[in-house]
Length: 223
Image (cartoon, rainbow, N blue to C red; front, side):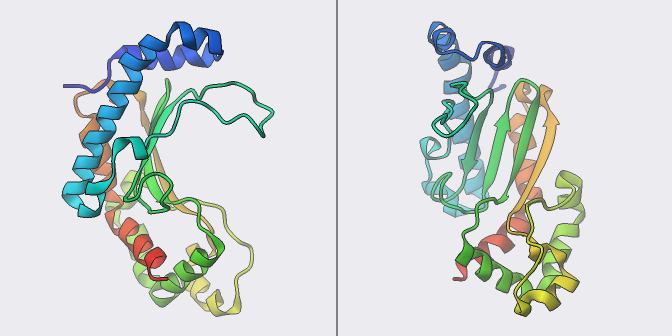
């Protein structure tokens, strides 16, 4: 049975046009019934599926993974109060843990599935680079694995132009050590959202990234 009906996507399309507090208040019941509650249930099912593969996911709850639909407009010129998508960062410890878990996001036009390390603190970045420098060929092989390449194409993220001397040799073998972000994203058809196979589609992408995810996690936890 599908988690979402077409009404969920209609709501996201409508809020992109009517991104106003009064409109949202008038349509709150639709938001709750068609989108908020089904998304919470979907994230719960994703957590259970992740936990079957990696037991560390078992302790996390959906409420610790789901991002609010309200936008933080305090420091933004864009004062629209609501996001036009729903999203969750599913990881041991929740969305703020920094663990390279599973990210899922959809709006009225696309479904996005991915993961990796998006925010990496300076000290953690150094430790992760040490991990890569110790086995650059392994990291390259994981990124070139057919399953990962087919699902995601390539590793993404901002890069440094220069590296400390101790990492320069490794950069010749594995240029990804220049990254300061290490994430991967797949953009899929929004038609997937209302199908019975949505959970399987997302988890197939989770599985395709298993080697890269575990490599990044080992590097981030080695400190």
